[in-house]
Image (tube, rainbow, N blue to C red):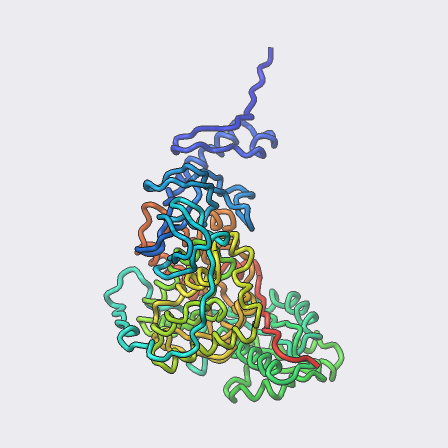
Length: 573
């Protein structure tokens, strides 16, 4: 009699201290017992998931806290593990956390009332009001859009709100720090600026030539890099603008193109115009000095035969010049680094954004420049911007760009936060803004710049850049303003990459484990019970230094995702 063994086991307990589900594929693909045993051994070598806290209070004195779904209850490695737009797991009613009993089911990363909150009473998070209770909120209840009202009044004048003592910051003596890299291996450009990549840029001046430039870039990029080993890649700046634009809209596109082309990560440029567009080549080239001309070529497509052949020849010409560039040791404070958040959730301001702010404290203390934009996600935080500005003039400039943003959006300025933000636990714009500004505060705000206007390096503080909140537009704005790397924090994830290294930081471990091909650093570790903030900060710092030095590249770079989206502003004829 022949005995058949079945390995269709729904659950296997192995000596890691937690149960493991065997993938259906491990059984259905007729694997041998040896294969199954090998798979179990591999699982045994993996460490058990870190135990996470179940509740996080942003600041002492808050009357709400953020809930985390039961740790280790979900298989984070599953393809279906990533919660998007309302699919987040819920902590059930009756569950007890640190003596607090939940009176209703609360979604992951949403807020719970730590005490009874009466109608009209202030709801406090991060130590600041985020609204008032529109209905009674008993202790242990879910706190969100259904029971919190917000009607913030904008502050448009600094008045006597600024105090000099509030913005004094000690300078960091880096020699006393241990385990933090003080330098990176980068490219020192002729104008003294520091870059972290040596890209070639194929830049279209008008939308109607952009598609063919994208095709050419895809065809030629690999061959250029193969023949010129010191070139990191070929980027194509394509867009749908440059034609029939007039006034401020045309000026903004010109400034953006010039800013991206002058970015320290660019070692050589080929500008391509159709010929009849409003944005003419002469207005672009006059922005560059004589010392840059050997790295610049230009081409008018309407004046020649096969533009692909001609443009390819020009690209190889600048490649030969850029290939002579070499990395050298550069003090980290010479870098200009941008910060941006997108797809934020209820943990973003507690983990990923807070980690950026901590990085900024050390980086700005060394003398570096941290750049931030997304003007619409500073609304409701005017007092904090004033308190952290280096002068009343800078403070007023902060208020002015917020007013410009409100005037630009009109009645739609209250449409932020997005549906995804709300599903992720953010209740209103004040709640979102307080978490968003944690990326760069409490560092000193030293200057305020217009859209795509050049940022000053080595500011020992923050440069605020006016511009929209849209992910693609704002990251493009940061690179056009001079950032050589942008830290992009996210709670729900995106695979997008901008016109340079876009370093993705997840606010939660579930996203990092479900999307390792998107995320470069997991700030969700800050939610672990036994986390070491100092160790996480050091790991983050050194991961950024490795990326700046080219020892590692971002997941977006690895996937070939480089995209630039100009702000579509003003009139079109």
